[in-house]
Length: 214
Image (cartoon, rainbow, N blue to C red; front, side):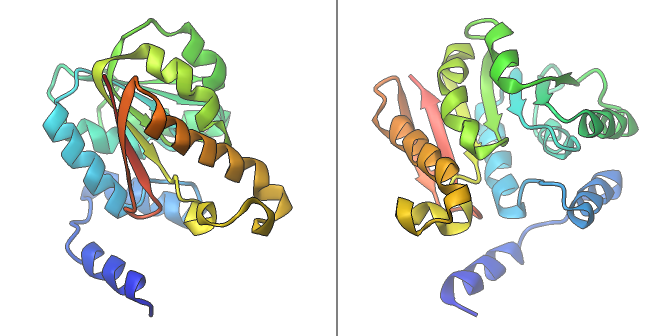
């Protein structure tokens, strides 16, 4: 086991497991191979929510609804969460899970392609955004994400390191992954060089970026 694996294992040993139905939702997603936020990543997400205390959250990439349900534990009662998912079966599963935990009045699932759904959302309407969808689309979401984010909004982007592949050069990456690789690098450059935002790129789990709209 390498040093980074040892560090990751050590850090993860301090993370509390979910309880009850939320734990079951997480474990079932893992077994079925459905993408869910990694445990170390959700710890950073949790602390950012507690610091920011958002009133309106937008998530891009619902999957089975786990992240939205997790976030709802660390927000005030009046906070509302909107989450976007393209896959019809995952939308149905997410809605079932949300109903199971009694969060129908807190979390709204929108079925659709985020590229188009984002364009229909009002300017400056969210103070916290969690981007965890198709990695090759982050750069395409970027301008609309900034548009709908309020000044001072926190934008969390997950899985930005692509299991370390982002470190490699374009030509050493498998040909089928090069477009995603190049687009993610472009996204990271944008969020660190755009004068409209301030960003930190963190090596938490598979990488997270914390961006604040000025």
